[in-house]
Length: 486
Image: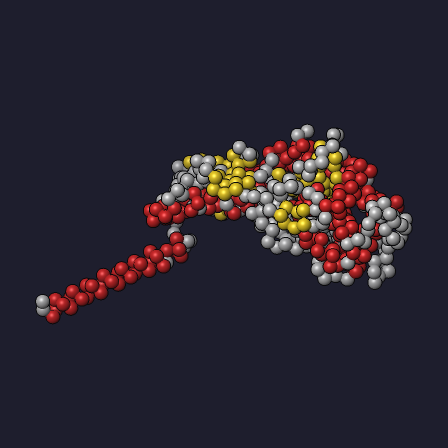
């Protein structure tokens, strides 16, 4: 072979090697970046080339998919979208995914490798699996009762099964229909723009992602901390709280909403029944900051990574305060703020004899053929208190419903424990108060753990009597009745 031939052959080999190296670099090392390049529509087109898996409540689907006849073959639909929007979130071809549609997107879209019988071959062949299904823990009757109870009010409901942490209801109002902007049309864009401009924030998940001062519902946490610390032993014995109670380091008295609280020597039971700020503020200070923080955190406060699996907003109980601030925090004011989810965890932890379970919104994941991919097992979040202390707090909450401010939560044939709360807010407390109620219920005569615990908050009511007992307790009652079967 001539020198020229050898040089030409060598040059061709070098070209082949260079081409192979470039192809390897693009197809292997840059694959992930190119796949997710915004300019690359191939994966998006492939994603919507088949129906999306469904989100289920019991055996029923609350989502669906319909053919579009357009660039993307299928778009998402929702059955009674506003009722379940706080659970499902949205899946939009234009605006992405949220809530369960987001956290479980890999299963629903069919991209989760667990959905494939031959995962390696599907990866090599770039074959898309049919979307799987997400079975929620939601109880249809409880969810519908929560939404009906909230009605046109701005508020939220979270209901939990205390023994397992299963979320039975998750409602937020005003709500929205996630199907109105699931596609790419001008109508979808207009629907999105209207929702974004709505000052009532219908797309805000108030049950999971909004925090409110819990007011007197937080007194359940304070009572538990005082009992666990031994500051109070006998529910009916005088607590030693003075009247008036002057906030430490100030000349300002901690005022009560009823003159019946303005007496020295009230017992813890009487103070809870009457919802006395002075007694519970005093007990919070006597318990001390460290033990108050520990009790609050055992219920989910200060946890910035509380996933259900959707991430909940961080509920707050300050870890650095003076004694006056601690007194105010102990009655659910100052900087104390909580999601309805965490306040439901408070009620559930008391009902479950002091064990707080990790809240969970997903029961199991399946393939399209129904084969199980993953089952979510109940897990303990924290042991907040001993069963003995929990029993004392249960008695306090029962007395609130039977004798005190929570009478509108009574259910015939059931034992109900609860606590009302009316939290001031705004500049100089000029805002409409937040009306709260937390509770649990079980059939009369039952020795089992109550099957339901609820937290309700009404954030902006036009009612003239804005209290937890008048506005929130009836909603909690209806949700508990739905779970109890009545």
